[in-house]
Image 1 (cartoon, chains in turn cyan, red):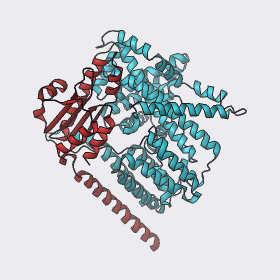
Image 2 (image 1 turned 180 degrees about the horizontal axis):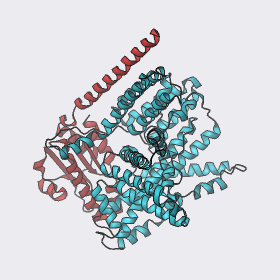
Image 3 (image 1 turned 90 degrees about the vertical axis):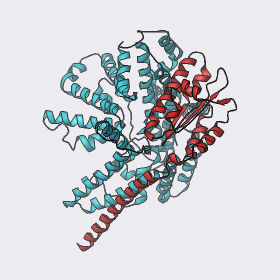
Image 4 (image 1 turned 180 degrees about the vertical axis):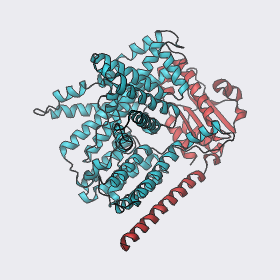
Length: 465
Length: 164
C-alpha cells in the first residue's frame, strides 16, 4: 500500500485515525501496531512473518543484553544479535547478488532461487539495530513492553521508506506523546504538501525521464535533461514521501526528524549529505563511522573509515555494483573536499559552489538510475558529447518547450522559496490565515486525487530499499 | 544470582529458538509452491480474462520473433496477444522460461519492445505513449508478464493471484 494510493487516502487512513482517536491512551499503541501490520501485510503477506520474527528476536535480545550489563558476555550477545540482523538483511537483499557474482568467477554454477525483496527491510532492520546498540550503550532503557517495541519497529508512517527513526528519539514518545489539534493540523499540511510533491511533481517529471531513457540515441542537451528530470523526480518522490511520513507521525502525536533540508541548494557535496536523507546519514555516523573512530584517528585510517561508510551506504541502496560505485563516488568526493578542495571551494561565489555541487550530484544520479555500470558510463559519455547525436537537436528543444512548467516548478520546488512564501502569507505566527490554509490544502488534495484517479504512472523509487 | 542465571538461560533458549524459527521460515520460503508449478494454461486464462480485450489477436511464431526478437522454441511456453487496431499498442506477452535465470532476457526483450513502440508514437500519439508508460513487466519465478493495456494493473493482479 502506498501513501499516494486511493485505498490508503480514503479507506485505511481515515479508519485508522478514527479508531486511534476513539480508543483510550493505553490502547493507542495496540491500534497503531495492528494498523501497521495490516498496512505491511497488504502488499507483503508472506514477509509479514519475517517482520514478526525480527520483532520478537530483537525484543528478547534487547532484554538479554540489558540483563548482562557490566558482564563480559554482554558484548557476545550484542555481536550475536547484530550478526543475525545483518544475516536477515544480507540474505533477503543480497543473496542473489552474491550468488550471481560467485557464478561469474567460479568454475561451477550455483543454482539459486530469485527472492522478492521484502519491502522496507533496510529501514526496519536499521531501526532494530539502532535499538539494540542503544540498549548496549546504556543510552536507552530496555523496552519490556512488546506492544510498544512492535509499534516502534512497524509504525506505518515510516516503516517502508523512512525516515529511519533511532530508538532514543522516540523512546519517550512511545509512552508519553501528546496529540493536539495544532499538531494534527500541521501534520495534515505536511502530508498534503508531501503528496503534492510526489503526485504532481515527481510522477510527472518522472515520466519525462522515462521517455528520455527509452530513447535510442540522445544529444548532449537531451542527456542532461534526462538526468535533470531524474534529479527532480528522486528528490520530490523521496522527500515527498518523507514529508508524508512526518505528517502522518504528527497526526498520531509523534515528532519524526525531517529527512530532507533542501539538498539542491547545497554549496558542497559535504553539505549535500547533511541535507539529503538525513536519517540515513545520521545512522551511519552514529553506528558505523564513530565506532570506527570517525576523524579522531590517523589520516590513512580516517580515509579508510570514510570509504567503508560510503561503500556501505552505496550497498544499502541496492544489491548492484553501480550502487557501490555511487557510494564510493561520494566517498572520494567527500575526501577530496575535506582534505584538498574544501577551502578553495568556500572562497568561490555561492552560485558557482551550487553549480559545482549540482553537477556532481547529477553525475551521481546517473550511476544511481542506470541498470549497469556500462549504461551509466554511456549516459555520462552522452552528457559530455561522447556517443551523442549532437549537442542539441529538435528532440531536446521539444523536451524543454513542452515541459517548461515542470522545469520551472522543479527548480522553485527545490529551494525554500515556497516554504518561506507559505510561512509569510499563510502560517504567519502572529496572523495565521487558517481559512486560506484550509482552502489551499483542500485544493491541493483534490488536485492530487484527480491526478491519481486519471493517471496510472505512480511509482515510488525508494520502495526497493 | 541463581535467578539471574535462570533468566539468562531462558533468554538464551528463546534467542536460539527464534534463530531456528528464522531458518525454518527461510527453508519454507524456498520450498513454497514454486510459481513454476502452476500450469501455463491457467495463468494464460487468468491474464487474458483480466485484459478483456476483444480487439487482440493471438500471435504466431513470426510475430513473436518480429516484435520481441525471441525464439519461442527457447522457452517452455509463450503466448502473445497483440492489437488489431492500426494505431493501437495493446499487447500481452506471457512467457514461461525453463529456468528462472532466463527471465532477465525476456524482461530485456520486453523493455526493448516498449522502447521501440515509444519511439514509434512519441510526438503524435499521446494516448499510446501514456499506455506504454503505464505498461507493466512482472516476473514471478519462471513466469514473465508484459502487458500494455488500460487494464494493465488488473492483469498484473490476476497474474500474481494465479501464481499463488
